[in-house]
Image (cartoon, rainbow, N blue to C red; front, side):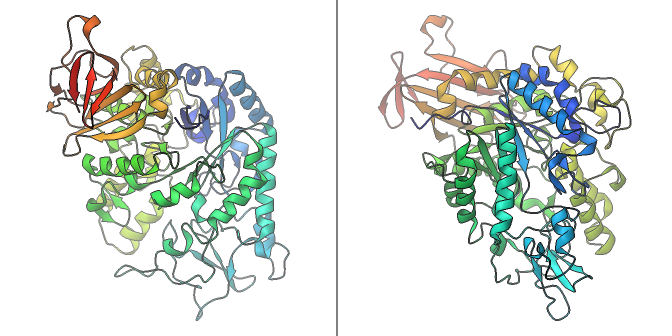
Length: 583
């Protein structure tokens, strides 16, 4: 068995502070709101709380544009509020991971304010400045939020790079002083007692210093920067330096957001020697699962196909085995709600579907991440117009594709936003059935999903069969059964269009997991028929979202995880309590 680590055995809960709980009635979630709800998180059983950015920010991109890394956003509270939250979290046996956003800062950060003043300012080289090319941008790179990735600065007649919003200028990681500033602020937070970092767009830090043009699609003005700014030439050098200077000095957890990362690259970022990070987030299953259904750009309103998702997730399981640790997630602050995107959020199937998805993910190898409200089965938001949205990505895309280029209709774009827009995950946490879902006594910064009267934490806690208690059991199983954490992964039923199945193996135990992704009965012969006499039953069911089963059948959205005590007879046959079982 590989080396045991606390972060491998943990379950992470992501909090989007702006939408979690408002303690002072201003319509915006805050740190004290999180502190007040720690008993809820403790009851759920999670080990680590990952906070999306709480630093001071003008909020052009909801906190991912930081103007002061050592101060708390005024809307969220004070540093004293943070210190109290940290102490209360630790007192309950949990940990806190901070969101580290250091590919870019806000344009209101003091470094950038100085940098733009003159070409010889001491902070000029903290950012990436280039002269115009033929009177235009230095190259054709497209921002992730639409338009050019370059912004002209009248003060000096040069352009600065921003791979995201123009209010998020990219830091120049080629400058050793920039790296030193980053390591200093990381050390400051580690000394405060935090337990790790989730690193935003970590694989964008290093850029090809030639800054060549990216490939453009037909009819597009701007090109793809990915070949020159994703997994760049010095990224592993930078992260190994960060590890030597900061990470290796503390017992902390690190996970890097790495869109476009391959399994081969992930093995470098999360190598077992611990020279860089503990794990990375890849986006293959969220970005690639519906690649044949794209409407325009990244936007689609189709349903991902399970066989495609299975192929992607299984590839990551198999190729990282023994070579890197993986992360497991369905949704986060940048993704739509899991039960709406991957499952079935209709009233008849939402609960079963949410439990099925949870089983499918949490029984795999890697560290699981739960996004706030996922444990309630919260759903996507029925946005009716762009005025309902707050996300800069959705707003810019609508303006680009509908208003300016008139490539698709406004309603079709809204359908895309309702399907995969980031605001789906950012609507307020649904605490109870009172006004505004118990999130705030004021006017919420973004509208509350109207289904909060049926889907909320108060109702879930009162229902022993709720999605909440199912997640609680899944978390407990990971804590109690070593095979769930460290067992090797082997896929099953790869030809099925309906069932996602696999087994986990550790010593003389095999855990068999099967999940029906459809609303119809599906044949499944992975489990022996239940014995009337449990004393002779060779299997122990760890969890299922059905109270009773049909022999040889998985019922609609049924999930089962069954533990066998086995001895291996042949590559495909095991002996279990005197029976041969073929998987």
